[in-house]
Length: 336
Image (tube, rainbow, N blue to C red; front, side):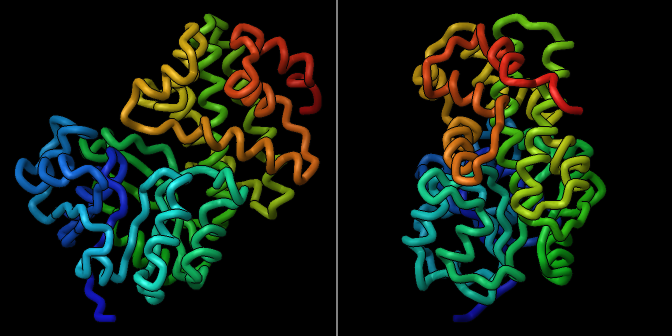
């Protein structure tokens, strides 16, 4: 298979579009796949993603395609995946024998696969049969609108390969975006997945009218719970004190652009979960990750009172008004 230096991005949502535009502005040719024909037409004809990122002019170096098996698109030597986590495995199975095994794969999604209970790096190794030294994951406190607006932002890239890290960092880094390097792939992905669940809980706390003090205690104890779980999977504790840990957790729990925090907020205000999910054209990953994590925690026999209580609101019809009381009863204030 012939390769080129073009970058191919899977996913034409707000995050995929903002990353594509960033890389295109860094003087690289970028192709982005979107499942919606209207999004492709909007990007190609108007240089704007009117569905997911209206009002932001896109680079002329960016081209959108609708055919997932487009030959030129798949011949790139760098793939970036920004599609929702629950769709990654089905897409990789669909693209079996089409993915260039020599290409670097950069994951920019966050979550846990509900069916397999695998983190994203594990899905790629198992399904696409890639070398884990070709795998890179991107995380950190970065809203799509802030990145595309060229506001100062910092993210973490993690890989087992220093050469893959450097090649990937060169795609993103410029005067507005700083890239920090890590080799703790599993730690970065645990933090990125579970902070979305915590953000739903933080939104619920806001929605029902609990205090800022309550929310701060909730977030702090949540981070402790995540760190305890991560040790069982071999993650580095220092990861959770960096950009992809506490940095992303703070942004997602407090930011008004946070889909997960806003999902929780509307639930706290009394809206039905199904109605909230249908009201947005973007996916709040924490909803699905919550269910996957509960299954995973049972597998490891890990007690997670905070994450279990959020799951209860999302899937067991537990009243959001009782979220904090349920957590306190289960031990939120115990230990350190």
